Image: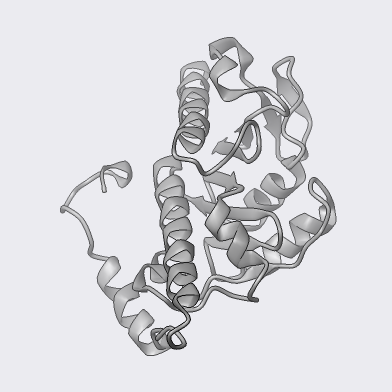
Length: 221
């Protein structure tokens, strides 16, 4: 069990560092977590990710009780735990990605500007604003995530969950890209951007089920 926790923590830290390198977060904004059985490994609050090492693992149970680590967990822990308790998620990536955050201030859901919305379960909703780290925000996110694996958070950022950290991160990056595309199209000012229909999205969702190489592991897409 210890070996699996060490591997999961290494993946959490690597993903958090990648989010900084890719410009999805600034400083220590955003957070990453992974579930291992009934345990959750999560990034700590207020610590730059490049300073985290193997001995800094933060582990809590599904009630939020800290079982390992001296550092305090992220202030967004209630949100992470709510998602784990309500879904089959094994990994969560939360960012303050700039284009996605901008879109969250403009619409109630991201227009169907691209078919990759199907990878998140359909039209991406915007969760109502609530103070960070609160149960109210956790409830708003769960509502936006109904039948979805990702959402925008009003005036805040994004949250995406998946069965692996790799998939959660890739879908987070896709969501930020779709938001950027919509902003670019909207800002052209020539005409209203054309969007896809729900029927077209359903077709893509069916095709995505067979996407990738046969027998490939989830992280090998």
